[in-house]
Each structure stands twice: as structure tokens, then as C-alpha cells.
Image 1: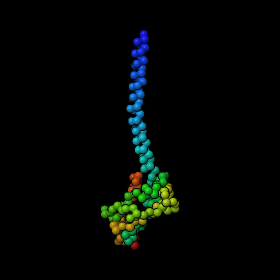
Image 2 (image 1 turned 90 degrees about the vertical axis):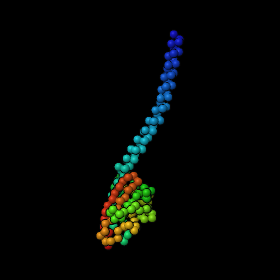
Image 3 (image 1 turned 45 degrees about the horizontal axis):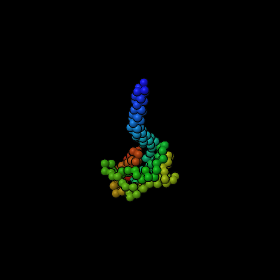
Image 4 (image 1 turned 120 degrees about the vertical axis):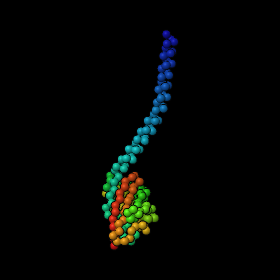
Length: 158
């Protein structure tokens, strides 16, 4: 009878150790998967809540002024604005212009750290690729780091 008790105890201890080993192997994988899913969901949420609209444009003499409104439900940091990709030029002949060299921005009606919902950003661009002839067409596109893209075409003024 005592040998059966010892055998049962050994099987029980073996089962507990096996369960602990299995738990230690599975839990890190579960945490990694849930962490990845959480960060993916956060990025998708940010992309959905970030929305901008080009509200006015003007170009003359190799420079352009563009006004863009934040119509999304999230604020956009100054670092994200500065990291945006801006393309400008004639349709089919445009290039990416560099922040602080070719373009600058001003957040209107508000602070300098965040572009909040309902506020407008004024972008000033100076580039030799901007068409200069009155009536010429200018292509403009902005791509925020989160993936929001807006583009427009407009004509050069006098």
C-alpha cells in the first residue's frame, strides 16, 4: 500500500513540475503576442483619429503658402509636423522638400508644441521647383508620420 502512495506522490509531483514548465514556456509567448496586438491596435487607432484638411493654397514667385486644418480628434505634436514629408512642384515633376531648409510652419491660434483639433497650420514653402508662371498648376502633398496623406493641385497667382 505504501508503494502505491509513493508512486502516486511521484506522479503528482511530476505533473506539477510539468505544468510549471509548460506555464513558463507559454506565458512569455502570450505576453509578446498581446503586446504586439496592443501596439498595433494603438497605431491603427491613432491613424483613424488623425485627419487633416487642406483649406487654402497660394503660390507666387517660387514660393507657396498652404493652410491645413486639423479636423481629427487627436492632437499632432510639433515633432510630427516637422517630420512630415512634403512634396511640391508641377504635376508629374515634383520633389520632396526638406523641413527648415525649404519649408517652415506656424501653428495658428495656439501653442507651438501641439497642433490641436480645430487649429490651422500655415506652411510656407520656397523651392525652385515651384512653377512661377501665372496660371501654372502646382501639385502639393503632405504625408504625416502616422500615414495620413492629403494632396491638392492649385494654380499660381499673379
